[in-house]
Length: 164
Image: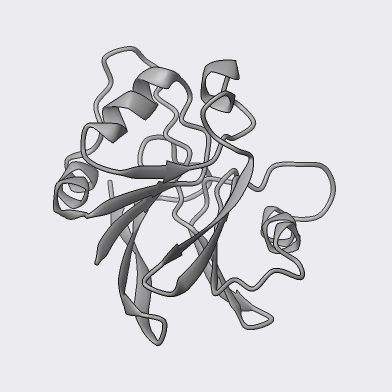
C-alpha cells in the first residue's frame, strides 16, 4: 500500500497549485495522511479529490477544519499503528511535543508537522516523521512530502520526496 504523507500545505496565494511531484504521488497513492495546517477548507477538499484522506487539524487551521478533524489521532493500516498530530505548542521542540503526544500509547510511527522541516528519526523505538512542506519550505533548501509504503507490521518504510 502506497500512502502520500504531507503537512503544512500553506497556500498563501489563491490559485496556487500543488507541485507536480506531489500530484504524481497523490495520483499513485491509495491513501493520504496529512499532519495539519491545511490552511483552509479549499485545500482539504482539493486533497480529498485524490482519494481517502486521514488528517488532523493544525494551529493555523480555522474552525471549518477543526469541525471535521481532531487535533490528534491513531490509525491502524495493515497492522502498523500510526499516530498523527500537528506538533504545535509551547516549550520543548516540535519533535518532543509530537513524541509526548503519544506517550504510553502503542504506536510504531508518529507523523507530525508544524516546523516545515523534514525529520526522520527513531525516539525510544518509535519512528518520528515530519514530511516537511510541499508549498512552504522554511530554513531548508527543498520542498518535500513523504511516501509511506506498508506491506504489513514488519515490512514498511517511509521516506522523503524532495524537489525545488
